[in-house]
View 1: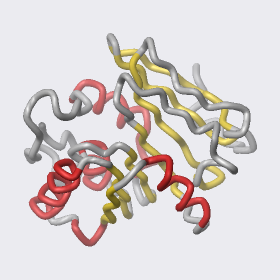
View 2: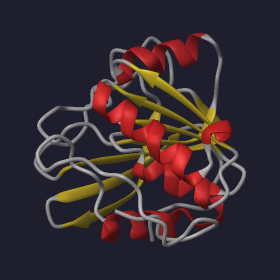
View 3: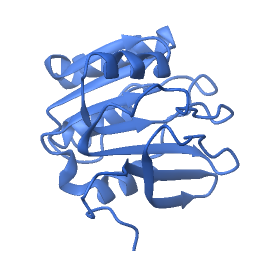
View 4: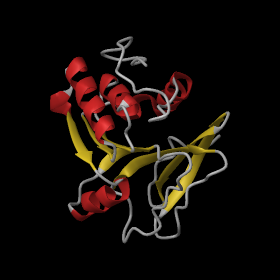
Length: 191
């Protein structure tokens, strides 16, 4: 795996042995960041189910102000730490070990907001945010990007107040883009 573009573009990052984690492919990652464009620069980013930190590290390389990484797996947390050190991004990152949905609730309770939230849950797990008491911790113009298996769409529920604005398929992988309903931005509106 490598960082595709930005400040440390071309640098290799540490991955894991096959079967433990399923990192985002370079093709999907490049398409994602092409869609996001300048939205990454200066953004506060939340990387849920972060795995090796692949998406969050790419965001840092492309000018994100700070990335918060969340993963349940201790080996993944260690790899994220090593990748941050090797790229000299430790001061621009926070790392939390634990359940992603539990941390979403904590961020919301603390009124922390993010401009971008990446969520890449295990493919056989449904992403269920319908049980959250309030909306995602997104800024008013924030964007949620869900990566999921094409046969396992997320369960957002009516409580989430999200509106899907775009979807891209890459074989078995789907990227779904959501904004808050009250957001006025049309920058990512599906064409």
